[in-house]
Length: 531
Image 1 (cartoon, rainbow, N blue to C red):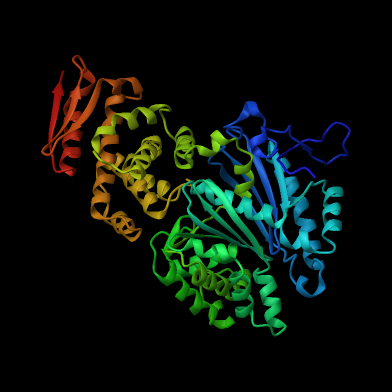
Image 2 (cartoon, rainbow, N blue to C red):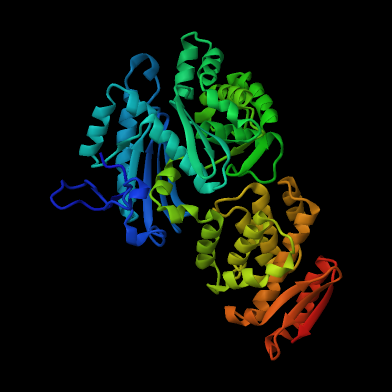
C-alpha cells in the first residue's frame, strides 16, 4: 500500500473519488512521495492534509507554509472510540466505525474544498490489531475513496519521534506517545532515532482491563519493566506526546497558575510531575469533572494516562518532562523531507515564513541579524537563534494602530505557531517584538516572562534587542543594503555605532535618541562614530 502523500486528484483510469500517489522522492526519504525538484520547500505556498485515524479519535489537519515548519491552518477532531471494547471483542467498536466513516467522508470533502496539493491518511493501533481492521480500510477505499496507510507499531513509534524532532531538533532522551490503544516509546539523540517499543498501554485498553478487575498499575509496571534501554534516559528529557498527556499538562498549568497556557514546549521537573500524576490518578470521577482544564471526553482517560506517566518517570528517571504538541501527523511530513531540509532550524524556517507573510519589507531580517551581531558579545548558540528569529519577525505589528502595536506584537509573537521554542524562548521573542515598537516593556509582560523562567538579564537583553530593531528599521527605511554601512562595537563602558564616511542615513534627532535608548538599557554610553 502506498505510504506517502497523495495528490488531490484522481489518477488516470481510477474510479471517481480515489486519490493517486505522488511520484517517489529521493531514496533518503523512504519513498514518501516528495519530488526531488521541490525539496526542501516543497510545501511552501501549498496546502497538504493529514488524516489521523486513531484508537480514540480521528483528526484532519491541513498545513501550509515552510516545509520545515508547516503551519496548521485547519484542525478538526472527532472522538469516535474505534478501539473501545476491543480488549474483549477483538473488533472495532461498531458505533465508532459508523461515526468514523461518516466523518472521514466529511474530512475528504473538506480537504478537497481547500484544494490541498497532497493528502496522507494513516491508522494506528486499533485498526492494525482489530480482526475487522482490513474490512474497515477496504470500506474507506470504496467510499469516500480514501487510501489509508495502516502503521505498524514500529512505524508509529518512528513517526512520533520524527514529529518531536521536527519541533525540537536537538531532542535527547525518550519520546513517549500515548494514544488511545498503545504507548510508543522511542530513544532519540544526536538527531537520530534509536531503540523503539510499542506497548498495549493506551487508556482505552487499560480502562477496559480495570473494568474487568485487573490491577492496571501492576500491568503498566510489568510492561515498562521489560524495556531495558529505558534506564539510559536517566537525567535526560521525556518528551510527552498525545491528547491524554496534554490534558495532564493543562491541569498542571492551571493548578500552578501559569501565565502562558500553551502545551508545546511546556516543561516541568520530572519528579515533581510524577507526584502530580500520582495525585490525579487517585481522584474520583466527580473530582476530575470539577477540573476546568480537562475536556469531558478526556476524563475517562485521565486516570490511566496518569498511572502510565508516573510509572514511566519512575523507571526512566528523566530530569525533566517536556510536552510536545507535534507527533505522528507532523512526523509524516518530516519523513517526507530530504536530509538537507531536515537539518534546517525549524524556528528560523518558521520565523522567515511568518515574516514574509506579515512584515512590510521582506528580506530585511537577514540584514538585521548581521547588523546586530556585535550587540551581545559572548551570546550563547540558543540566544543567537532567538536573535535571528526576532529579526525575521520584527515588523509583524506594523499594520496595527500605532498606539497598540507594542501590545499586539507581544500577544501575536507569544502565541504564534512557531516551532523549536520553549515557553521562555517565546517570551523572549515577544518582549523583543514589543520593545521594537515602544522601546519599552509593560509590567504585565515582564511578569509573564518571569513566569516562563526568564531572568532579569534575559528581560534586559530582550528589551535591548527590540530597541536595536527599532533603530535598525528607522535607519534602513526598508532597504537592507543601507545597514551595510555600519556596525556595532561594544566596550565595557560604551556602545558605538560605527558608520562609513558619507552615511547620511545614520544622522538625525530620531537616530540619536534611539541609539541613546539602546545604550541606556545596556548601561553604556552611546557613541555615533563616522569613519
